[in-house]
Amino acid sequence: MTEGWRTLLLWGGASLVFAATAVAFVLWGLNGPAYLVDLIAAYCL
Image (tube, rainbow, N blue to C red; front, top):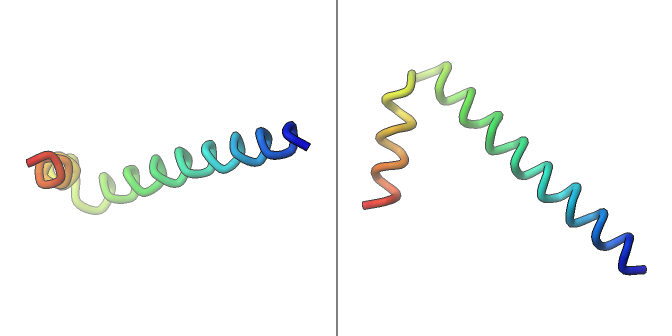
C-alpha cells in the first residue's frame, strides 16, 4: 500500500517540476529573461 503512495507522490512531484520548467520556458520565450528576473525579484523582496 505504501509503495503506491510513494510512486504517486514521486510522479506528482515530477509533474510539478516539469510544469514549472515549461512555464519558465514559455515566459522566457514571450518576454525574455528580464521578465523572469523581475518576477523572481518581486517575490523575493
